[in-house]
Length: 241
Image 1 (cartoon, helix red, strand yellow):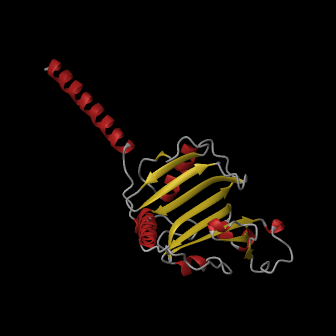
Image 2 (cartoon, helix red, strand yellow):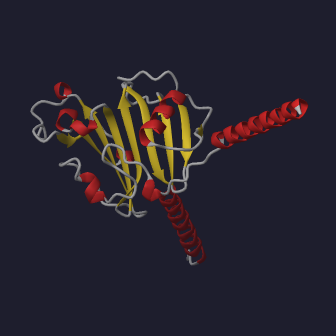
Image 3 (tube, helix red, strand yellow):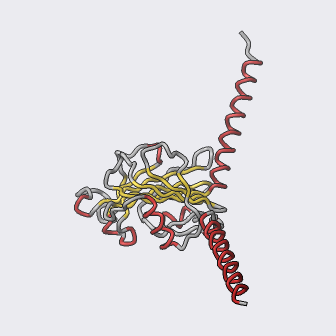
């Protein structure tokens, strides 16, 4: 009887160990099941939000008309009140055009962070709209928090936003930027530390991208290229010397 009891306990222990190892592996390989509608909100912005609603968070911000692809971009650089340009037209409102900003990112604005308490700790915001909806959102945080590594950063993100899933290496692991990605059902979240030559004061960045919208833009680009190619071929065929 005693021998049977010991054997039973031994089998039970092995079963428990196997279950624990299997459960650990499933957690490690867990995927993010969140849809686009469940994408987290970052400082009042979220994927799928209308352009009008997004811009309403920052009175004085405007965007250029959408391009042929239906794409619009805007870049916001947040500044401390003491550093904000004095005598500027938008000083009372806390928003003004950044004439040094590049056109590749759409219109650029300087934002007085003291006017927008909800954006405390943020140094930069990038937004892209496709067909009038937020398709890409990037938040650049200041360096007030010194993260030891990107893994510590993503653990804090996951805990704060209640995210589940396994973060993976970034799409460009050979770059100097330390980056991790969390692929979800309807969107991609990317976290990175450093790697921003435009503003050394940015300590970490977090972005969300609607992958369906991204593929739609890619299709439109390809369609335009094919159309231009057909038009070029037609011009060659109908050329008369």
